[in-house]
Length: 166
Ligand code: FES
Ligand code: FES
Image (cartoon, rainbow, N blue to C red):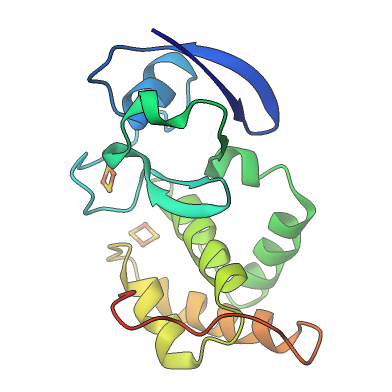
């Protein structure tokens, strides 16, 4: 089965089976999420992508459902100016690179801040907590999130974090 989609800005067709998850196809056919240990059950956050602008776990999305949709993975996000600016800010706050999940954390946090620019400190902390991390990076991410939001144009028009987001 071939599915046409836009992946990190490229219009392409990927092949996969009718029971494959989007994650499986992206990993096996598009070379994304290399060697990453993932739960494939919606728990670890390490397979997150933007699907038509909304952050979702790709392991829970049936491949056949993404026909004609736009997919952005952490790898695609890393080619953007926003990524460079956000990462530079986190590095100023003391970001230490963890091969396993730093890029996943940055992608998840940035997606959250874009979707909820009015998030308060507690909401940012909860969002950061959604991706498991034992290396002590969370305070860095929390400081970075506060600084990023404070640097945004004001007044910010954005949605409130809905109940049950976390
Ligand atoms: S692989 Fe863990 S949430 Fe998808
Ligand atoms: S960022 Fe990887 S364990 Fe914390």
